[in-house]
Each structure stands twice: as structure tokens, then as C-alpha cells.
Length: 366
Image 1: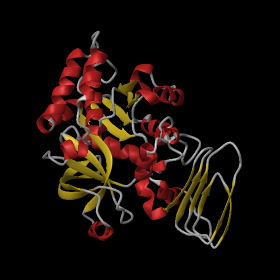
Image 2: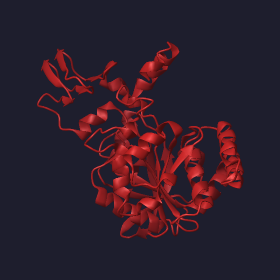
Image 3: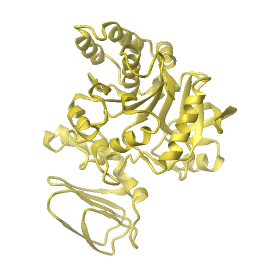
Image 4: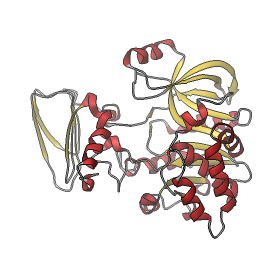
């Protein structure tokens, strides 16, 4: 594991957890399921694999001060600032350039373990075993991804269809990826769970710096050329200016769409380590035990009559009572300045509500 580097992507805004997640304090900085924030948990999970000098957090300038405060164990230079948000392909490419051009304890052509900052993992030791196996697989296969065995017909995730088995890594089966599948409807999701050939796409990847740089050159030549310009100026007097200029012109493309769906020879390791992307408010029903009526209540005094299957969250300095009568399947979230009430089935659409707020000029609530 001496060449392993954990690259934690922490630039997202977590908009589907609005109004708790805000522009100045996004989801990864929140304590959703315990005393530690999601990004703190993400770093804690990898520290038994790598020391703090080999943990690289990629984020945007707005969050640097908060991340440094939450992660004092990381060297200051291990927080890499994206000049602009341009999705995961650009984020990962910039991290690869950093590892390629910046002297550090990782050595030449290190193995990148690429992880989101805002996921929940219930079995950290199983997670680490899988990452060790993926690093082993990356010695033979250029691009390795992690798939999770589905436990329910989830329509909010992408899926990976298994191809032929290609061997084992530290006891874990390794398969070719037959194809990546976009988020399905409920009928298709049920079929995927039943057939035993589909995994949830976790958004976790393992590969060498050289391998992902070559894949970007092959499948995203415009992005690659921009990264090459950044690499040539890296560490020089105009390095930051070049990076800002280049990033402003890059397309916003995910690594899945830009590379993985087009590349050949990608492999996947199926795993189960109690993973949840905690992507929207209904995740609270999986993170916390409901009461006898199926309601999940956090941070609030709740009194309800004929109230069932609701999620009630209060976050503020003053204790609040939430009283409900004759409702079900609602998400009710209250902060100091915002109250959200939405149908649970529409919780994935909160971004549309934020777009409406922007159009009305209510920037102060975002």
C-alpha cells in the first residue's frame, strides 16, 4: 500500500439535502448520522490504509477553511482547490496532475483510490478490505470500479451490469464490466435486483495516475489537452492563472459518462460494506430507526396524530415542537430561516425548488 493515495472529492453542494445543506455548508460538512461530519468519516475510513500525508481532498475555494478546520490532521498542501466546479472528470484529472507533478510521499505513478466525501459506510473494515483488493486489481487492470450488491430496487442510482469473471484479488471476485446503466425506472430496478447481474454504481474508483491520464487522453481529448496545459504550468509563477483560465473553458462531464462508459477493459469488484450515498432526505429512513408509526424524527420534539412514514428534522439553536395531523409520506425540515415541506416521493426534485428560488432572487436561502 506504499504507493496508495486516497483522493476524496469534496466539492459538491449536496443540494438535495437543502435546507440543511447550504452553499456555505454543504452536505459533506454536516453531521448527518453522528458526532463526526461525513468528510471526517471519509478520512477516518482511509487512514488505516494510508497516512494523512497521502490523503488528498479536492474541493472548491468556498470550503477550504471549513475543511481545514474539520481535518487538522491533513497537511495544508493536501487540500487541492478546483478553480471551478466542472464535475468529476475534471476533478479527478486535476488530482492526477497534482500527484504527477507535486513531490510527495506517494512516489511515481501512485495508485489513486477515488472516493466521494459524502457517503455513509457502516462497515469500515470491510470497506478497507475491498479497497486493498481493488488496489491489487489495479496492478493488472487499468481501471477498477467498485459495485455494491443492491438491497432494494433503487431508482436513484446508476447500475453496473456484470460481464465475465476475470480472476480474483485478495479473495474478491473481479469481473469485466459489461456495461454501465443509467438510473432505471422502478420496474427495471426490480429486475436488476432479482437477476443477480447488476450492482449499484458506487462512484468509487481505483487506478494508477498514468492509467487515468491515458484514458482521459483517449476518450476526452479536449479535457486532456486542458490538463496538459495546467501540468506544463504547474508550480510556476502563472500556474494558478493558467488553471483558472483552463477550467473556465472545460465541459462539465462526469467520469462515468466521459470515460467509463466508453472505455474497454474496465473491471468491477462486487462488494457489500453497508454503503449508502445518503443522497436525499428519504435516506434518513435507512440511517435511523423509525418509531412505531414509521416516522423518523431528528432534533425535534414531534407530536403527531394519524401521522405515518414521515421524516421530521429540526436544526437550530432553539428547541422546536413539530405537530402533525393526518399526514403521511412527508419530509418536514426546519432550520433557523427555512421550513421545507415536501412529498417524500418528490424529495429527489429539490433541485428544481432551488432553481425556482434562484429565479425569484432568493439567493440568501441557498
